[in-house]
Image 1 (cartoon, helix red, strand yellow):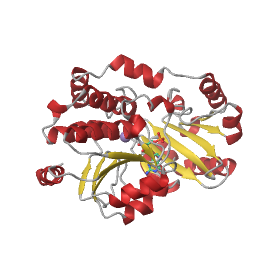
Image 2 (tube, rainbow, N blue to C red; image 1 turned 180 degrees about the horizontal axis):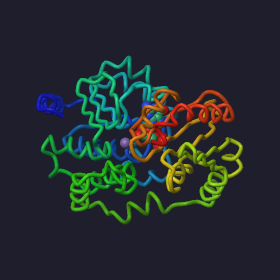
Image 3 (cartoon, rainbow, N blue to C red; image 1 turned 135 degrees about the vertical axis):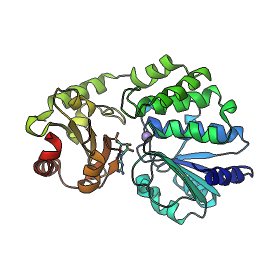
Length: 338
Ligand code: 5GP
Ligand code: MN
């Protein structure tokens, strides 16, 4: 954020505002953690923010302090619409295009509030008065820490704020192992621990909560793994029928895509998950090194994200989708195998 943006934010927050904070659809640890961390900080400044998530989020995030106050746009629909309409200031966190909020998009477009975007994805769109966008950042939670720092608010970071921000940095960096993890990320995390974030407990809350259903689903996923050595690619499919058979609940398939990348020589891993209710195949892409899954997802699957982690969707059947995908790999063979 440049000094003009900081001044703008300070002026806005010096007055009482009607604040709404919004994460992307299917919010992950970084989206929920950054919203809760920011909300608690704004409360310390005397504001009274409301978080509205486009839809529900996984159980492994439902212990974070304050999460019970998050509204669900699908469930609390009329209340959410009223709040968006009445808002004077809307923060959008961990996404940079309003379409990432699904059904909320048209209501956000119609809103009269000023927008502040805090996000680390590529190619931000231009809807915000203040755009704090930095693709070099590990996570939106690290950026919210910086945002607080810009406002000279670090002394106000409580244990709850530290806990929320720790969650997002931990989940978006694969527990501090991805290339996006910098020495500065570790400095921020060290400060969060000093402020009371209980690192071991947080890790357990998020990761050590497997259910039999999830482990059975992992078994199905690994069994369905297809390895295409000639393209240094591995992909997994999960049909709605398989999900139903093993009592799938939201978040159960989180992280499955990464298994493909643990194979020696594989640099591109994909998971295709059928969602019959929405009539789509939801896709997660991961890569190691220079192959940009952001570009791949953007170009062919109506998605986007980061160089090494992106998502997208397909509106045709699972079988048609995987056939199309494998055909596309031919086109990318040089990039994948160079
Ligand atoms: P995941 O595969 O874990 O859902 O998402 C990986 C990354 O890509 C995340 O940073 C997420 O925000 C982003 N992402 C996931 N799905 C989409 C999508 O449909 N469109 C865009 N632009 N980004 C996505
Ligand atoms: Mn993120």
